[in-house]
Image 1 (cartoon, helix red, strand yellow):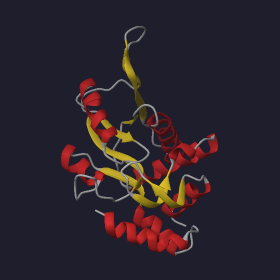
Image 2 (cartoon, helix red, strand yellow; image 1 turned 180 degrees about the horizontal axis):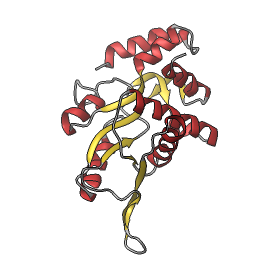
Image 3 (cartoon, rainbow, N blue to C red; image 1 turned 60 degrees about the vertical axis):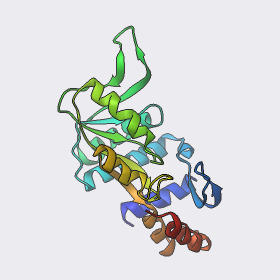
Length: 217
């Protein structure tokens, strides 16, 4: 299996990717659901970090520091930075933000690497629905230093039209902020994995394709 196929199987095994009928926050009824809150063991987090690392390496994304937006992004950035070193011998820094600026001790907004001008920063997130995390992260990062945001890495690109646009959230991120978003897999990869029997779910295949045809960007 390719690492993308392994990742899809990993998501299913962890019950992060499930099939059925789900009402999303957008109101759309989808035949699949991604719940990254179901990653909950050290072994799962270690493996997840390896998939992020493979995506970063495969796409040649340059990074000095991985940034994990609080709170979900924190363990993801840490796991990815560890995996980059253990798997590929690539040493990068990591940093994450506080929800509120600390006004005592070392103070500041960020924990981990202190950002500097020209530093290449990659944002690590789980999924992108509306681009809210990116929109909130950019002023924080740029407020700390004139960093170079070289990309954002997410687990799954739903390739789905935003509610107010014919473009997907990933496409909007590049159009609005100039930040390229990379995903470990896309919805097309998931459909292909079902078709080839990598994961079960062929009874939902027609609904997956229909949903993509209606909402796909």
